[in-house]
Length: 143
Image (cartoon, rainbow, N blue to C red; front, side, top):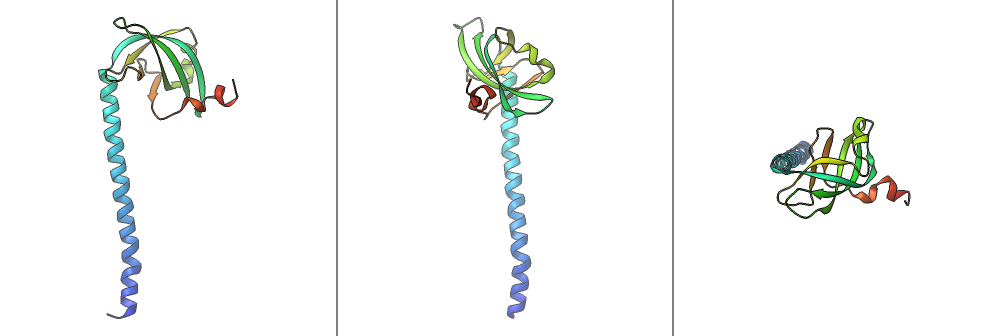
């Protein structure tokens, strides 16, 4: 086999191996993301209902025109344990922002394994993980 044939094989073989590697990595990533999403849905379905008084509300810098990232601090009262404070970040439909004012009482769901995870009971909000309340408009503006 001469040098030209080896160069030709390598020039086609290496990019093909790289593409196969990228496809494998993306597929693996989507599989783990899908498992995480299924687990999150299961946990939210098993969460127990409670009432929550909104103690504080701050808007995050993430979000769009339809849903805004909102950081909430709640006083949770499930009727079985002593009231406690918990925080959550939710994407809230902008048409329903009036429902999450300080002092409002709303229905929530509490994770059965982690009572600090507070899920929305209504369809106008979506629970999120991984967003820091340090990225709220209030904290970034020094309030």
